[in-house]
Image (cartoon, rainbow over all chains, first blue to last red; front, side, top):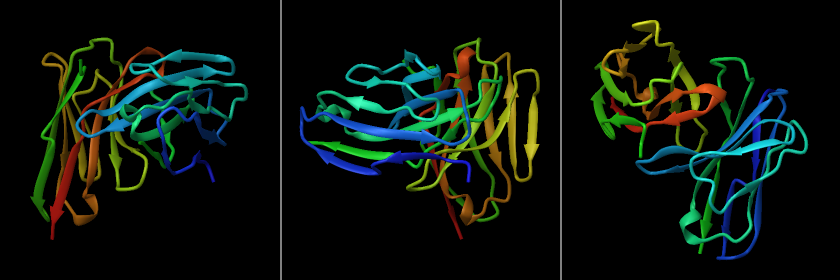
Length: 113
Length: 111
């Protein structure tokens, strides 16, 4: 089944404790992206990647890191999480052709205490 | 700043009624305008999309109306059903696959 998977789905952590949210897709998509969803703000892009070893900042990159060592994986790293990073996070992927649908993962709900 | 403004934030409609969600954008470089539907506990999923050279697109009960000169577009859900209860996001896509989303509209269809 073609899908984007994320782990964990739920995470409660404390300020300053490094964490990684994994994202994997099995559709051979070049493009992958991380979004955070907050009430009233929609989804805002954190980082994106056009292909392996190519990453770039989105609209809200502060406090996050990413890497793209393999085409299928695009982990999101929070080196020192803070309470303002409490949010619902989505990974998405797509082909690079114009207008191609972005497929979203099921989401990771993160709470930073 | 929010480049795509979406209204209303929430909407209650009776079964069989019409749901209308409006979006306005600022970035004239957007070349693709998708609508995503999100159910609780799930990720957004593409519902319908339109390109700026088309004024209307219809897929079943869902229609996008697009006004390029006004930089506005809207989603109409005809004959709304309880199963349409979800959050809807409009978006604009610029070069490089970047999606800029509106703030979302929570739609509740009452039986």
